[in-house]
Image 1: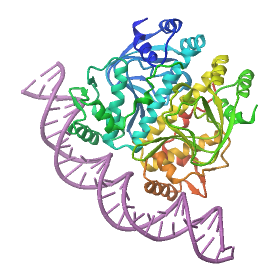
Image 2: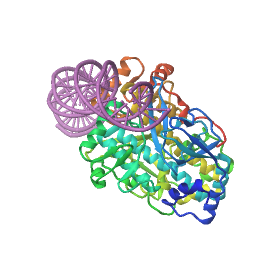
Image 3: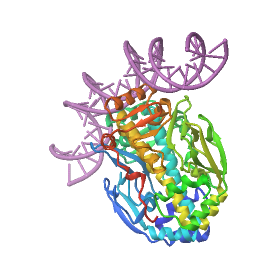
Length: 242
Length: 242
DNA sequence: CGCGCAATTGATTGATGTCAATTGGAGTGG
DNA sequence: CCACTCCAATTGACATCAATCAATTGCGCG
């Protein structure tokens, strides 16, 4: 399998078995690799992409911008996430995809994806699944934004990221690299930068997390999950026929 | 076409053309009709449905419940919405679907849906599209929750509902029926009931809306849209090949 | 060393939540 | 037709949470 698609296959296979034919369909997808710097836009709001984009390394986010200059991040994505399958069907982007860290991405033409799905409807369903899981994550974000306190919300986000990074092998022990700015965090959880900073300090002083030099550590996973009311079911990390 | 599927076809055809074969595939879907009262759960959190559910009449919402009894609604759905396509792939529900008004729904077995998609990948993509549009709406909700003021958020929601109801023919002039409780609204926009009430009054006293006896009226569509920063692009009401 | 961005802090203002009534309207039984 | 009841809508007073403004500190890098 082409190196580009290792993380993709790994994340698909967390949810269902891939047949050799399906692996080969993935392997043969044409991919145009590109590198981005932190702050770059991989996909631009209101554009009409003809390719979809798979994250290979780094951290990106979906962003919507408001007339007054405010920004909301509506999702984060990591290696192995096929970030932009939406464009395949939506045609017109309702949001941008921005790099929060330097990152690599592979762009795959829509036409190739559609051909692969017509060859294997099951593979198509697995890609569909990945957009549906994005939806589940978005629902969790909506619930956090609407009904959780700042510190519980942040704790929930950290739990989510830990599990997702673990899935693609980006966790070491209790820690993961998280070279993200507090401004970015605040645009995820819908708070001001100042309040975000104080919320992080809350979690730190409760001993729930450590976060220094771009590394987040969760000393006691279960304690953080209890505090965050975190139940990973919605991430659908169950391997079963779909 | 079976009466049940009229609104469904109408909402699919707002996005792309259906071939006669596709219409017939839809027409032949087996459906089990059920009626629900306000407050009933059509689909229960943590359950594992083997059918997906199409709304025929009434208003329903996706709901997540928190340990402390709080509730967040993460989406609203109306006639013609295939609410629970998610379960087809997710298997395990991460949320409930609750009736906000009395409503009718048709339940279609997953196996029949999958068969239809294997017969017509394009039809499959249109159903996929409908979940992707749900995602776009959820992103708009995230942005509203995170970065819009209470009154702009509410105005945005009203604009969204107007457009969506219009699509399925449920708007009369500038008005639509909206037999929904302020408690439900507050669980959509993540505010307390009291503050939601005051926010509605804000919009009323600005002359942006009228809302009495379960009927919402928008005297000046454009003025409300400007206030709400509402751009309907994300609802993807463009007819084009997908 | 010094620049520049990110993180942190303090003080204050503004938005929203909470508590506790009160009002209004639709349906029901007398 | 009139109480009566129930639930939704509304109001006022007050407490809390979070935004904003304005510095200041800390850290990585040339």
